[in-house]
Amino acid sequence: MKLILTFIALFIFSSSIQAAAEEDNIFTPVSDLFLAVSNIDHDKMRAAVDDSFLLLEHGEVWTMNDFINAVNPSEFTRTNYFSVISSKVVGDTGFINYWNQANLKSEKKSMDVFWLESVVVTKVDGKWLVSQMHSTRLPEGKPPIGVTFVKQ
Image 1 (cartoon, rainbow, N blue to C red):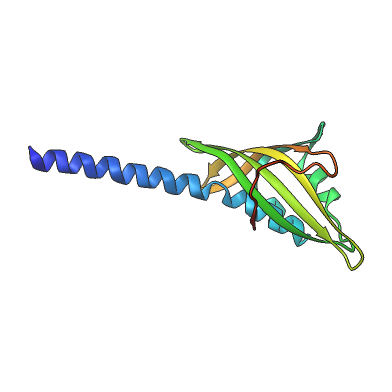
Image 2 (tube, helix red, strand yellow):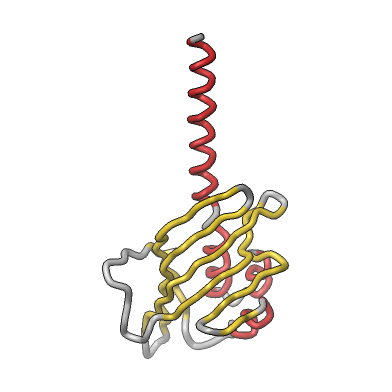
């Protein structure tokens, strides 16, 4: 009987560890997508999303092509920072709510832009990909209060 209880406890423990690892991994495509945006790498942007990707960007509906068309070379370099609010995995679908900060810097100017965002990620062929993103830009000069960001 003790052996059976030990196996059950180990199974539950390993399942909990696996679920926690999945939740850690679901943010990877978000990070990959914004790194590709920073590097103006349209192929890597496409690689981070699935075929049905939609971006709800500050009151507009964007396809991946719309998103790519908005990402062009400029005098600014972009550094990304994130603060995850919550995440949850249900089967092959993940839900993430987070703050996004981009520092845009040129030789003459540096500015921070902030968004409150949520994504739905799906596991496709064993890899997490962004299916949908909702992004609300905060007013200029109004960063979120009490949020600690981590550099990408």
